[in-house]
Every structure is written in structure tokens, then in C-alpha cells.
Length: 115
View 1 (cartoon, one colour):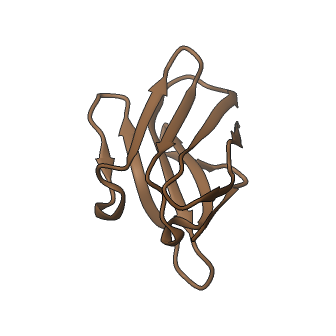
View 2: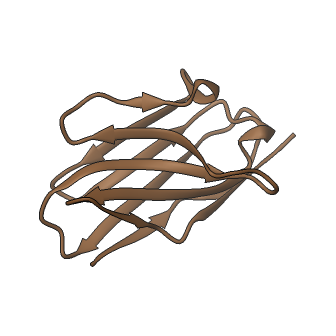
């Protein structure tokens, strides 16, 4: 089993920044995908950004140029630097990792952007 611990959410004014962290622990052997998703009230969960172990990144169009995903393999941690935040970024943000075909989710961290 892999456990994920997210941190860094909170309340911020529009135009501000936050950095989310997600640390993986437990039976870690070869995490080949790490990503961030979000779910706003009344909406489906959506991909925000992803970073596979082989390199490269993938972003939702709505966050390109504002969010940056990165990972520290030595710490089994993935980060999401969020800048120029907008009220529509308000959501619960979830960390997701894939290992050997198994998908693991964090408990979620609330991000609220006030106008």
C-alpha cells in the first residue's frame, strides 16, 4: 500500500500563490506517474497537471502558464506551484500516483481563492 499526505492548501486572494505538496510513503518501489486533480462543488474531478517518471509534464488548458508541477524522486514527493490564482481555481485538490498499475489517492486539500 502507498499512503499519500497532501499539504499546502488554504485561502488566498485572487492573483496570489500557493504551493501544494504530496508525499508518498509505504510500499514504494517504482512510482511511474504522479499527478494533481481537482474537484469543484457540483463538478467532476478533473486533471490539473501530471508528471510521469520518464519526464515531461501535462497540464489542463485552464492552468497552463500559471501552474507548475514538479517531483522530487528522492523524497517521493510531488509539488504543484500555483500562481495567478483565480476564483475558478477553488476546489479540493487531490494527489494521485500510479505504481505497478495501482492507483492511489490522497485525502484532498482545499484551495479557496477569493475575489
